Image 1 (cartoon, one colour):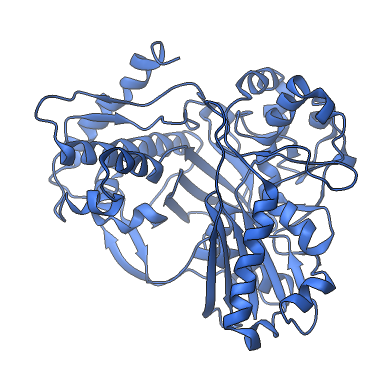
Image 2 (cartoon, rainbow, N blue to C red):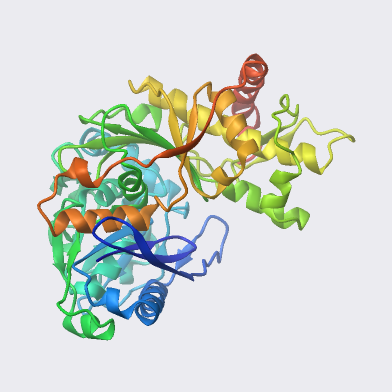
Length: 484
């Protein structure tokens, strides 16, 4: 048996699979986000521990016999979070999350140093870890002076599970301190932030062993022998492992809280000017490129809160047949935007509304706006040398077939839906646990799921969506000067 634990933004999910990768049990526990000021997004790291305990306690209660046979644990986690510990492993302040944009000034300062893009292969985004810690240095110097270790969210959970300070290559890629090509911490980049390698965790590949579960926790969950804990990965890389997206030419789109366009690469291919992320993958000698929008399904959730209608119901109101573009443009910059603009202060808008713009029209506009933002990401990946042939869709938004039809037509790409199953971060993490505790080949473990359904571009509407996208592209520069 193997366990995958995904430390997400809205909650922790744990999953138990057997050696044939059949899902035996799952459990989820929600976590709250604190937003004390505009642009701030924080969590208490202890909440991750309590949520992890709750999920594993639940699985142990319902599947005690299977839990006793667990050989390995894998970890998946929300990326970029700055978890700061003192020399006693006490939390120094709430963790600033991936969508916290307060460190815009620090990010700009760091990005003006050519070493960062040259060594890390990426723009220094305000959401990355390094500028957040620099913000602490500038605004909370007493806390900065006490930093003993900087850990990412899943790696704080690992510390509690194993007592080891360890991270993996994929998650570390999003800190702005990693030499992504050489897969090692950069002393040059750490020095620029007044930090050193002793304050960083040890690095392993996602499919390698990072430690062993503490004896007391093994007893808590009735595990016969303390299992090994794999390196794991950032949430997008583990999701890719869950879907078998590990080879050149394979790609997926995630319509989760954020939106992700992810393509596996056999070589390191940075192009920071395009605002595309070039990160290490969760397995050795493999990288990936990724475009990210900050508000994908979260845009529909926001609109759902405003209308008082559940998000799924809003989508269902549009029916099953694709319609021509709504004529109303939604810019999904509710929390700023990452790819392709790297603009933390831009804000969203509806443009082109009239007295006839009813709820259905605005719902359609929200779905289209998210898709057009993803098309911006596809253009950025293409500028980086990556050509997409098809996409596998995952995330909560992928349950909306109407949304997928818009996506297929606006991107002019087939969109595949996996056969029913769980191929997310927790499942990918459990697969990495299999690799870390066995001699099985990567290709035999990280296989692709069967495809349940494919959505082809609707030829009747391709030209209309192209025209609508061309208008959409003009709107960011048009509103930039008035939304600061």
